[in-house]
Length: 519
Ligand code: AMP
Image 1 (cartoon, rainbow, N blue to C red):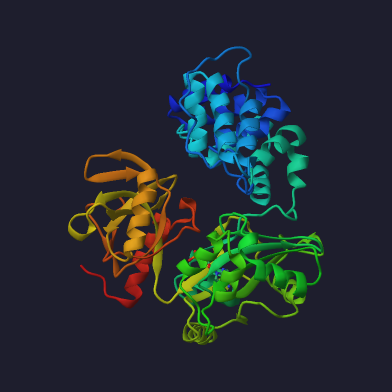
Image 2: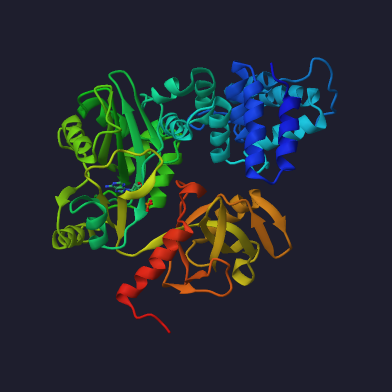
């Protein structure tokens, strides 16, 4: 059994190594020498997780207690830590808090200072070794001598590197190739790129495209068989308990089980009008009084994809065939508004209907395309009436005057490779409650503080409206958002799903199709 000390040693060496290739080699060597039962645990811990992403358990603690350290024999193992985490997460009922504290204190008492610090970093969700999920994925391929594309595909289907690593290391290419979507294991949702007009859409999609209304709600993935229904959010948290009405629909109205469906839920007010996204998030977070809230805030359900029907995977089937399967599963109900178009005029007419009905735009899908879990590309293009970008908050300035006490001026960045490129700042768009929320959230993510600006871990995603994208001599990216304003906080998005610098450049160029270019 691998010792915790071996992982401390590895993470020290990773932190001291700048080169990506060298980091990959170190992780691959480490994985290779592990016993099979240690591989999933090591993979989880290396990616800064106590549990797999789709596992609903959480630790609900911030750190290990500072205990007098009396490391003795036998040394702590990875399995010891995994068992302690499981017991902490599963403690419930009266006395749960005391049980959790006692369990953590027992773990802390056996840890060396280095081990203590490592466990704290796992609890905090980041090892700070400069090792991303992508790098761990490459290391798994290298350790198993397997094709990177196969490992990546398996990771998308299983949504969990700690399930992929043992499969690759023990079963090799054959086991990886056999991975298909599994009922009750959520897949990463397929994502859309920003589309730059219907001419481009039609040419990217070979002359015809499936257009759908783009609903302004929250993504859900629903898995159902005769006995069980489970629903996950876009970030793969289990939201089944927050959506009893959707569960009831699945039980009552879906055919051809088992199925996996992809769709969007929109919250409605009593008069049936769509409610702001923040209200819907309230339902996603709700644990108590769910039924009452479901009564106050009914949901409209719009499915747009079907990944599994009668237990058979449709993941590689063309988009249009998946749509037909979806229509038969739902009997034509609970669907997104959908039409196949082959001209710009038809597309514009469809978009006009979508906007008139109050939706934010349209999605255009390549009829021949397979479903690519986690993939973002031109197979799905989004065309919004008012363009927004999704930025990551990388720092915040302290407010003054009315905003005293708050972190209220946010430094916005887009994704640039594995890092983030600043493109603007804003203090506009948030309510007082949201300022307070942001201040607490960013405070918890603080990395550095010069008394005025707090630099934070890039975790919080905000959707940003702007007036124009400008050339900027100030930012290394060369671009800046003019009159940036936060349209909403996107708790449902991870930083990896933020807008890329490349997309921002394309939006910058597109401006000149409607505006003259300054000289
Ligand atoms: P965005 O969040 O701006 O990147 O847009 C992509 C999101 O739009 C998806 O993740 C879905 O949550 C949402 N969406 C709304 N309607 C559709 C649709 N018809 N097809 C696909 N995604 C949709």
